[in-house]
Each structure stands twice: as structure tokens, then as C-alpha cells.
Length: 385
Ligand SMILES: *Cc1c(COP(=O)(O)O)cnc(C)c1O
Image 1 (cartoon, protein in one colour):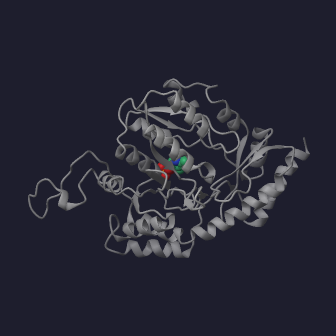
Image 2 (cartoon, helix red, strand yellow):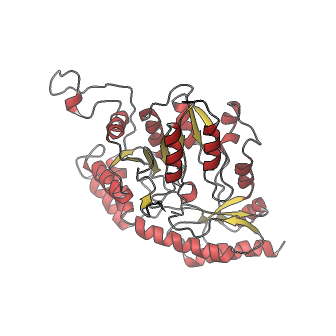
Image 3 (cartoon, protein in one colour):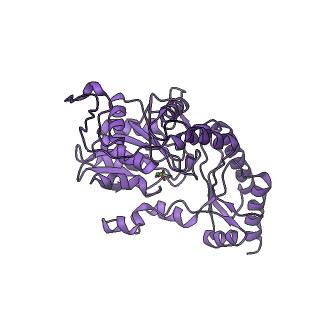
């Protein structure tokens, strides 16, 4: 059996052709393929605007800038995510305030968020960054109500959840990143995510003002709308009005993204099948504590199982060429965040989850026989104990 990783990109001939055609075109960056990718992605997410950027971390940074996080401002986020989610607050000098996760979903515990805000001073918190962890959507409708009450903005980190959705109280499907309940949302096109572009990111929103601000910030702070220039020196003239960055995506990456996006629905179907098979195999087994389960709207970037004797299982699987992963080391335990005053014991549920969690292989090209091999090896490990 070849190595089975926890996630893997799927590149086919149509992807290669798409990239080739950009390579021989006029534009390698900032060309029409970027605009096409943004348009198609916005259609898929069912939002008004999308801004392509160089990666998911850059997307988070631009969102933090666009929403105006400033030195000392407090922003709430979850300890169960990739560090980048919290880091964007620090890039702008903000203070990261973690709130523990819900023991069932491992998403931010919204009741704890509300309690924290209830006991806060007016204006103490400026925003919140929830994560649709593993592909399971945050209840954005509920979070929106809470955030509104206390005047917080929301950046939805939807890196795990393109295609995920909730059904809100009006019985409407609201896709992750759709922008009905969040000011901004971000996605990543790192190869382990649903859509691989090598590197890449996207910001989605329904807010026109933020959209234009993000487009300027993506490219050095140069005003993209010529009618808004303050001066005019002539046809060569461009105008930098604020401090921005070069966070542009290339057209080469955008072409790959478009081609991958076209297979996204198909990929989601396969991810759901894989989830069902894991769920059926492990339900009621005494060696599991909890598993992702079969949940409508879940985008299944990861299939997480909390196993007893997780670390031994991880090693056993690795010796059998099954490379599982642990998502995530709680961010507050990273030495950088400990130096900022966080410590072990602060978020007990996140820490306990970290001790038991394991992300099993989950990607559209995982074959039935490979998945069966993974399941069989897990049963083999526990039968020998
Ligand atoms: C991958 C990821 C990011 C960062 O995306 P990059 O494209 O790797 O910079 C941020 N948040 C979450 C939840 C992620 O999974």
C-alpha cells in the first residue's frame, strides 16, 4: 500500500491545460483570469464580492486591516484552529482573547462568548473570528445576533468549509462565507484544502465599501478606482493613498483555482461518502470518544475522531504508511501565545480535545480500498490491546 496521507490535492489533465493556457497568454499576474476566478468563486459561495489574494493568511491580514484592528483592541477567536487565525490580530497590534470550544462541535462556544461579552465594558471587544473548523459551519445566525448586540464585526475563517452551509431560522440555506451574517470571510487554496492553487486565498463579502478597500490594500494601497484619485499628473499616474501590501494572486494560480472549483461539487459528494463510511464503521465502538459524524452542511475538510490511546494509534498507523494528523495544537499553547499571558489549563475543553483528536485520511481521490485499509488497521490496533 502506498502512503495514505490525511489530505492530498487532485490534479488532472484539465488543471494542467488550464495552467498551460495562462502560461502562453499575455498576463501571468493581475490579468483577466483573476477576475474570472473571483466571479466564479463568488457565484459558488453566493456572495456579492470576492477578492483573490496570495494565501489564506494574507486574506486574514487584509481583513484585519480593512476592519481597522488597532493597537490594544481585543478580538475574540478560538484556540482550535491554525495559528494564522489568531496571528492576523497580532499583525495589527490587537489583543487575542481566546474563548474555549464546545465539547461536541469543537467550534467556538457561543454561549461562553456571550457570557464574556455580558461582563465586558462597552466597546471593550471590537470583533470576533470564528472558524468553521473541519468544515463544520459555525451557527453564524446566532453569532451574528450576539455580535450585533455588542457591536462586534465578524470575520468568518471558512478555510475548511467552501460548500458548507447552515439552514437558518427562515429555512434558508446560508453558505459558509456567504456574508449574510459575517462582514468578511476568508478561504485558503493551500493544497491540503478543498481547492488547490499551489498557494492562494480568497476574501468574500457583501459589503461594497470593504470590497474596494480590500482591493486597494491587496496592491500596495494604490487606489484601484481612478475616479477617486486625489491628484492627476497624467496617463502614467497611479496613486498610493494608504499603506498596503503585495498580496496578489497570479493568473497561473487563478487558472488552477478555476479548474479545481469546477470539480468542487463532485469532490464534496465524495467527501460525504467517505464521512458516512467512517461514521458507520466507528459508531458505538468503545475505543472512540466522539467522531465528526454525518451532519448536513458539513464540508468535511477533515474527518476527526477522538480516540482512546490516540498517540499510540497515531504511531501504529504511521508504521503502516497511514499518515494521520492532529488538528490542532491549541493556539494558546504555542510559546508565542504563552509569552502573551496564556497558559496550559486556560481552555480545558480545547486541551482535552487535543489529547484525543486524530484527523483520518479525507480527500476525494481516497479509494474505497484505501479507506477500508485505514479502518481495518484501526480495528487491528484496538483488537491487539
Ligand atoms: C490553512 C488555514 C489558514 C491559512 O491559510 P494559508 O493559505 O495556508 O495561509 C487559516 N486558517 C485556517 C483555519 C486554515 O486551515
